[in-house]
Length: 204
Image (cartoon, rainbow, N blue to C red):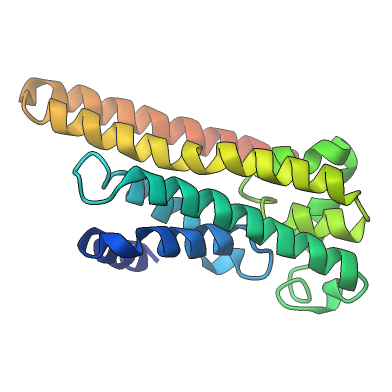
């Protein structure tokens, strides 16, 4: 999977004109319930963000592609849940992994209509929540409002850290004495994200 991320980001670096469409497809895959498990969208988007300070890609296609892909991915998942909800448990990947739907149902019952907005930022349930919202017949206006607003925040939230990290690293690289501190800060950030993820999964 890491090799796939590296290859795709390398392609974006060499073909900047494809940035928007590629990030659109990546964000769509990350948000679409039926393929999100096999698309390393988060890693790709963070890595793509690091190309901006280098001047390899423009920031606007990254943001537009990420927001549009995330919105459409959730939107189609919602429609499928609304239209074919009774068939979803028997379809791949939920047929062999029913716990995915179960965790989504628990999340939706806990947070109600806010689930679509909140769920966007929780990896384990991100792509399932829109599907559950459709199956639970959430009102379309409420769904689309939460869908669009969360996408407007989610995409920049993934892209900006890569931009900032690349900018900081380029600055620190000119003053080698700061590199150990930067590495330690990065370790703390990764540890914090891992701890938050572990805590959330334990509670669910």
